Length: 239
Image 1 (tube, one colour):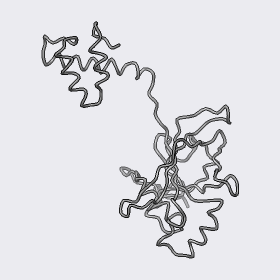
Image 2 (tube, rainbow, N blue to C red):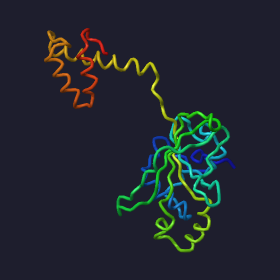
Image 3 (cartoon, helix red, strand yellow):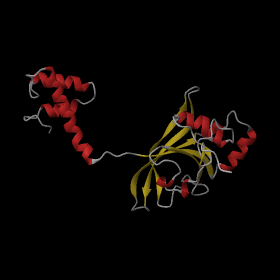
Image 4 (cartoon, rainbow, N blue to C red):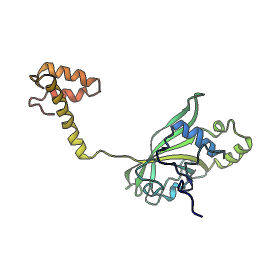
């Protein structure tokens, strides 16, 4: 018997018009904590997956949208703090520091967020890609187990030495093209000059009154530096 249309990749598929955009706190408190201790989830919308078997562009779902997965993270060594992050074509590399996730109601640390970038190839010759992953883990087994049964806590703690559930948000970062970088400054300059001439037909971009007014207006938008460089140009072009 075929599965209905709202079931895809083993989880419930949201109907048209609905989007799954949880906050960091919601992911940890309502999904990851419940997953780690085998409690019912609010909704079956995050599938389980072994990230080591998939390159990011081969993951289930649309490649242009952010996707969420439960992954049973496994330690690389029995007593080590490094984890297996290799795939068929590369590996996930952590960047920056982990960010704490605080529960708003009790002001308590409930989880950590780690940023990772996918590198294609093998070190030291691997190259970074546009694929980004936010990996969420529980702050501590003892802290996360508060309010849960001791029986399930014991079962989880025996596995926590080598494996633990994490939830991952994976998406592809859009990079600005070279054409965008070259066209945008001239486009913004033409708009500024057009607005000045519309207010006062006799105004000149190089006049002191116009440049002063332009700087005042632009400083509110955080673009004071770009306006100064344009106003100081003798021929009215950006330098």
